[in-house]
Length: 230
Image (cartoon, rainbow, N blue to C red):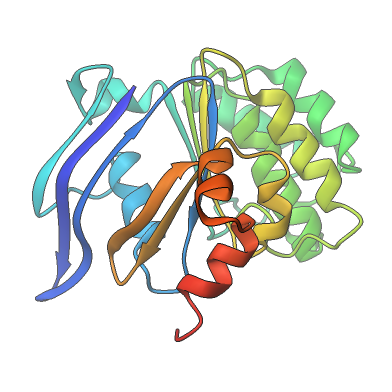
């Protein structure tokens, strides 16, 4: 589905992503793991076609990342991206105008399930509800690849199960989901693969069960071991 070959990204001479090669396959949920500044967000932005790599290549279904790939890739950033005047309903209308694959009925189902009122103003939402709104708008697309950057930011411990359930229900044999989060214990419950990134490079990757068996540790324990000095 998505193939990255030796990609690198530099900002003013500083390397944010260093020689990453990675294949994202349909039917799987991936955890992209690492501390702040490890290159996770930069990688996601390149995969989404928002930032161009300095070196290397990224293709989606055999085509270089660009206008066509954006039709099939749904990216949720960490930054808020709604205008303050918008209601929850306005957000759905806004997305429907931008994306042909946006399912307004599914969007309404998601916002209701996550405890959002259709007439609620985006600017009055708590950080947790605003995070749920971003996720609902992203998951309501019929995309092939979902890139979710810190989807659990601002989500309280009780609501995390709602978010993880919504993500898990989006998964199918034809879609791939990549999530980043510091809450590794939450991701470990549903992921198929884990990718550990440190200082812009992949230091460990593989199927979650294989990594557990080979190292005799959970994904959480591996995370603590790899990033203990960070």
